[in-house]
Amino acid sequence: MQFSMRRATTALTVAIGVTALTTALLTPSAASADGRGLPSRATAVSRADAAIAGHAGRLAVTPAQGRTVRDVVTDTDGAQHVRYDRTYRGLPVLGGDLVVHLAPGGAYEGADRATRSDLAVPTITPAVTASTAAHQGITALRTAHHGTTFRQAKAKPQLVVDALHGAPRLAWRTTAVGLDTLGNPAARVVLADARTGTRIDAWDALETASGDGASLYGGTVPLETTLSSGTYRLTDPTRGSTYTGDAQNKTDLCVFGICFSRAPAVVFTDADNHWGTGSAADRSTAAVDAQYGTNETWDYYKNVHGRNGIANDGKGSYNRVHYGSSYNNAFWDDSCFCMTYGDGDGTTFGPLVSLDVAGHEMSHGVTSRTAALTYSGESGGLNEATSDIMGTLVEWYAANSTDTGDYLIGERIVKSGFGKAALRFMDKPSKDGNSADCWSSSVGNLDVHYSSGVANHFAYLLAEGSGSKTINGVTYDSPTCNNSTVTGIGRDKLGKIWYRALTVYMTSSTNYAAARTATLKAATDLYGASGTEYAAVAAAWSAVSVA
Image (cartoon, rainbow, N blue to C red; front, side, top):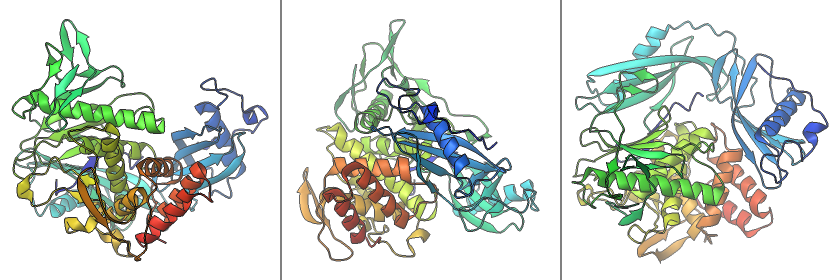
């Protein structure tokens, strides 16, 4: 785990259609999706396509580009925000994402782009071979893991256009996966110039953390299950058929499309619909925590933000518990649309199935389906912070008297021998010994779990304000980097502002300065530009040195 929570993802990858703009497309009542006069997804996409065609020059859209819709957000007033991924001559473009903003009637209001380039590269023929790129990926994987000898290692190169690191260039994005001697997986993504072989960037591909049921961490919790042939299955039909299965202490041999085999997810069953014993000795107990965390996260996003599942399509994910051997990790994996939890080694961590870990991991899935923040540099810190922020808000939302809300990350899974009360501390991130409290030009060079401290600190200040206070029995003392005093506006407004910024304004290349702009736009949309909330967002960013 390296004392962090991450996710496994393929979401970094992600013919120009010209649609005539007609009077019908501008009619608010056309193709209503829900009977309230709001435009349907198809209508929003058609309008956005037409807007792109009409503003192609300004948006640097050319006939060589293709695009696919990643997400559509429709506001209560009918305004639409359509998010696209783009290709260049058939190749995925890193940093090609753009969000088109439309007024309620369909008129074009602007766009946010990860890059302003036209995405063109001189050639899409690489000078560096795929086998060379694969070798470079495996070497980088071993180097990143201090020379670990992996019993199996494979690499999968993909030709892409990199528009995230300066002028667009042809690149190999290589995902290398290995299994250590215990069978636990490791993965590394390497981005290299496909003409010269020069490495551009590299990052870990595993974004990790690390009826009723008696859970390990949350007491007795309610569960929705399915009765089949006289046996209850831990499958929730009310939340997209999300289920929890036993990985039987096996590991994946198929990660990010590089296939060996996949650890099982044997669905837990029970005779009386009372699950677990509250002890880790009962294998179904960890399953109770995982399912409960999934339920609370689903409910938080749906009831607070109107999001129907991780991908906003009503489909559930699934959990695997008891993964690997003493595995000190938990991760989200887009390739299986699932959460996976290790049991911990019993010394550093216990089973990694706590409520805020579940919220953290599922929020990586939400990020991958919306802004898809690149998992390196400042955008990587924002990716991790998003999961910390939303996972924390899930914990508060659950209002569980046994696992009460706090601004500590992973406090329930950490063993006393670890020497810390939690993995991360949002009020003063530097208390973990590594995270940044304040932004500086070097923040982007930190590991993403440490650069996330700037946004975590911002989030705490925005919700609770600066200074010393005790909340739910936990004492906090949050300083500011500019010696200012910040007054908080509460967790609810923090969550709404951050979620709107993530889903409407942030892109894969968003850095801290752009996150400030995105959250100020979100605050304006929700509460007005002259409101207390807008001023608080500005003050909280200034308090962590993001101007």
